[in-house]
Image 1 (cartoon, rainbow, N blue to C red):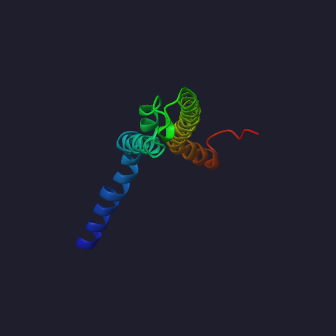
Image 2: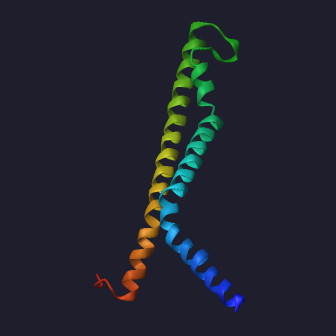
Image 3: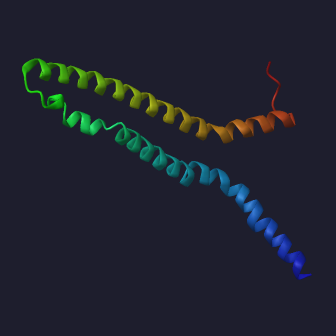
Length: 125
C-alpha cells in the first residue's frame, strides 16, 4: 500500500508540479539565465574581435612608422576596421536578441498549436 501512496505522491508532487511550474520558470529564472548568457556572449565576442584594443591604439602609427602619411594611413585603416568590426558586433547582437525573443515566444507557439490541434480554436487557412 505504501508503494501506491508513494506513486501517487510522486505523480502529483513531482510531475504535475513540474508542469505547473514550468511557465513560471521559463519567464523568470530561465529568461534571466538566458539574458546572462547572451550578455556574456556579447562581451566575449567583442573581446575576441579586440575592439577595445583597436580603439585604444586608433591614433598610434602601425609598424612604428612615424611620418605623416603612415599616421594617416594607419588611422584610416583602423577606422575602417573599427567600423566593420562594430557592424559585425551589432549584427551579432541583433541576432542574439531575435533568438531570445523566439525563445520567449516558443512556449506560447507550442501551446497555441496544441489547442488548435485539439480543436478548441477555429481552423484558419
